[in-house]
Length: 66
Image (cartoon, rainbow, N blue to C red; front, side, top):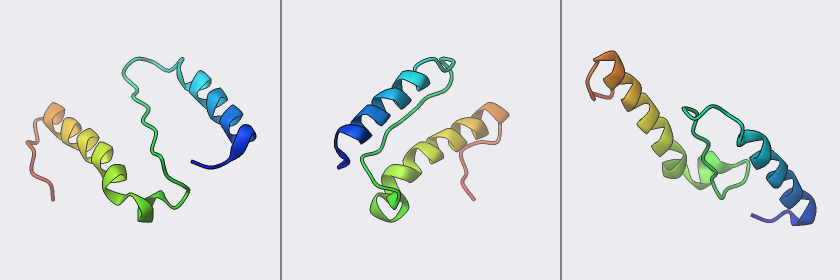
């Protein structure tokens, strides 16, 4: 992603801050801009679907997506 030294420093700070989150919270980075929904819809939807499928399984609802 473009952005130069300022954005690189910002990303390092965000990564540093997120490193302290509890282990059950997963952080994923996408190489996309603020228009990520249009740029990479599949890459954005995949972790959301994985999360919701896991929640359905834990709740005993099966894997059917409506």
